[in-house]
Length: 116
Length: 112
Image (cartoon, rainbow over the protein chains, first blue to last red):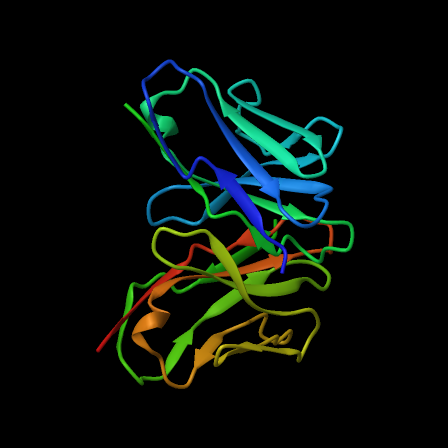
């Protein structure tokens, strides 16, 4: 079946640096990708929706200048956390949907970000 | 706005016990309903879904029935195993191309 991968699976960085997380659809073209954030023992919070070739749509309260999303191709979307701070430490999960998708069924394995 | 509510747990059961995780939703129209499972340290996997009223989704021994009259989608399994220990999320989408709205998740621990 369809697979979505994320890289890296874990990243530790210093405060003030930027971190890029990749989300790839491995055997289908993802016209839409969703980025979620999950706090410990909490549910997933949708951060933004990105469509290939266009600007991402951010949810209310999510800083678009801090969380840069690029969806340059039908198989790759990236989330860049700029000038990371300890409060950005979280589990980031992407989800991808293809042309015939019914709800975003395919989720990546997640990226654990720790900002020191 | 649209939302999903579920029992938060944690829920601890003995192996072979019966499992019910309650889920109710608030949404206009006719949403599709989902249960996702997240095993420790992993991402989400779709467990089952139902797209219209009275549909029953089932997978791996788990079942849930879409009840529009009670706006519910309770997850059940007749005999849980230790390997079922995970966090379970109830969720909905309004249309095929819409975002997924998740409930808070229910942590399940199954002990031998």
